Length: 299
Ligand SMILES: Cc1cc2nc3c(=O)[nH]c(=O)nc-3n(C[C@H](O)[C@H](O)[C@H](O)COP(=O)(O)OP(=O)(O)OC[C@H]3O[C@@H](n4cnc5c(N)ncnc54)[C@H](O)[C@@H]3O)c2cc1C
Image (cartoon, rainbow, N blue to C red):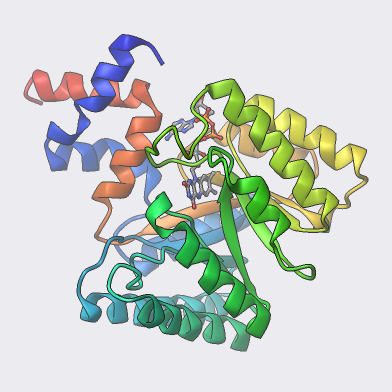
């Protein structure tokens, strides 16, 4: 990233919220579950699967975490009632991880049980490094008990290869992504190419260990390397999937689907869209540039 772009992105937190909302709306389905249903139905018609995420994180009050659980239970009923091809993604800190680990575990368990009733699946997102150990503990316990739950590992974390080695031997499903949080160099790789190299190593380890990989990236180099690994290891179509974010590189999405690969799109919705949108804007200095220009010109 250029110095100018870096300056732009670090200026993002001072941008007025309505403006961020206007530009960032490409990354979010809308504020209601009905918006997510509309977007997922549309994706399904284009040959893509969905994973629905209720926006929100870093919750400090039990009531808010419990309300999020209720919302997720409704999401599963709605996916079934509408006949959508979609699972869900959840963030532990929305479900109370920063309040109490066992409270969060119980909340996630309720969602996993509901998913099981519907023959569906829960993906636990990975947040910043302060949550990694607890998230993996909850994942391991619920996977052993129910099976229909997967986790996310981040290629920028130095620990990721060890975390892969510790995965369950049967039925593990892992989304591998680069990682989006700002982490200290002592625990995270920093170089762009170093992270790419660790991504490829991690993906190959997942495949060798018989883990179902969700290959989450829009980086064309990594997509190309992933296709090479799929080919090398002779995976069939149902043994992996690509994953992309709503609002990012729809052309690449279409190319992968046309190439016969399964692809899932991450579809966030809800009123708590600000932190998610800021993270997405940070990844994309071109959009950030428009936001800041509009701010400065008073539009
Ligand atoms: C389905 C999915 C789930 C994820 N879940 C998690 C998670 O649980 N935990 C976590 O830490 N991270 C998660 N991430 C984010 C991930 O870690 C990366 O930050 C993000 O995917 C960008 O990395 P990249 O591999 O696409 O490569 P990059 O090099 O960042 O991007 C490659 C290209 O994609 C395009 N692009 C990337 N981001 C944007 C954007 N926001 N807007 C417009 N264009 C863009 C650009 O053209 C860019 O050149 C997830 C990503 C995906 C796709």
